[in-house]
Image 1 (tube, helix red, strand yellow):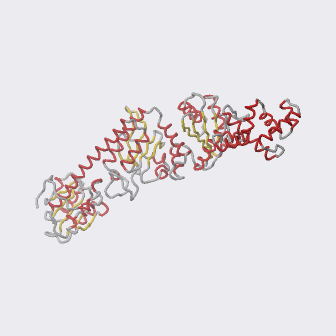
Image 2: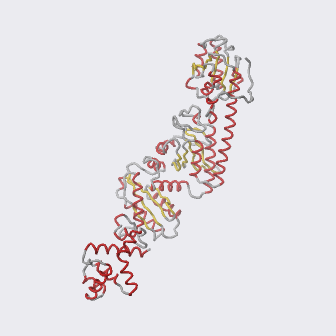
Image 3: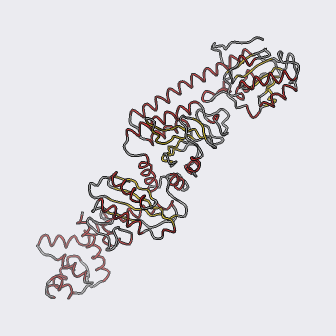
Length: 569
């Protein structure tokens, strides 16, 4: 056989099922050997089994003693063995040249000159880590080149189409003003890998996991990230083999986009054909690089379009997910909050809800409170939960003692911004997974604060112990059962006062407040005892109630309290 030139002819590919799935990853030596056109030669791998995941860039047929001069790297070299030198030194030189140029593998046919591989060839290939494959049966090398080249050219065309789709997808995201969360999510979906956006102090602001959990992706994030030195271009770096791309604008770095290697056994678009989890550039393909570079560009544009800093958005999202229990597993929340810089070990957590009543401005209040807590050395995350509502999660070390001084400081800062704001506090919890309960309690406290109600004297915030009967009824005022209860017990009395211009409801209030003492009732209402007796008998008749019964007085007292909070609106 003679040296062949690359053939661009289209051929019929008889490989059917064997080639399915190859279009989404590079063709490897192992893939090529599995093709029917080569499998017919009964291939045996003599050396380099560990390197069968090498990508095949081209097929080269040679009968020269110095084929390396015609190679560029990545070739599957096919030979009948006819040109091999006799002396071991010549064989070693032959193999060294192939290995130096980066040939993917050497395939030798054991039909014409040899019937078993020469020991010198085996030793030389083993020494250089070059896969050596023998064929026990005759194979048409031209058929091999046609089949493999057709696959390679098809893969290249598919790769170009996929790259074009990647560019189009990110262009569409940019044109519609997508935020950083949407950009990172799109990158993870396109690549099938976990993608993280971090800031300059190695805090993971956004994490979109793929093939792993948030806990697995973010545990020990800062330590792991600091082991990956920054670079000016997109490349694989660090002990774990992260693919990193700088996010910068006009030479000013804003952070990094990070793509994590796929775990063993998981597939990722653009990954190496073997599916190996080995660290190194082979863990990522050209499409992964394209995705991450476009991600970095889209994040830069998103930063220019959206005024909210990434950190503020990250804190908001983390607090909302925690309060609404949207984490996929209990272990995800500690990993995520730790990656944002909040201490999570040996801490107590307290949730605080801030309801602004004036036009203080959510973003300004959020920023001011976060800065005030930071200046005081209080570990916390602050974020807008809803318009006019902020959430704060305090993480307090055991040595810090009570949480009350921190909440009092926070409350004073809030009231300095908005004197009418309501600060509500949930109970202290020692496990971050219970912080959602603390947020729910803070929410119930806030809902039970009537307009204009002040906290008990001596503190500037409301807490669970403040919820008495009236506040409980105020929180439940929209429940139709409360409304129906008040109307059923007191409606006829209210109607009577409206029709006749009387004020029996006030007399009943004084009587109930006096715990059934008629003398005290008369004094509070500036009435004679006889008038009080007469009015109370009328109340009993209208309501069909016995006012001497302690239980019935309690029922009426609750109904009167419900009526009061319902009239507050």
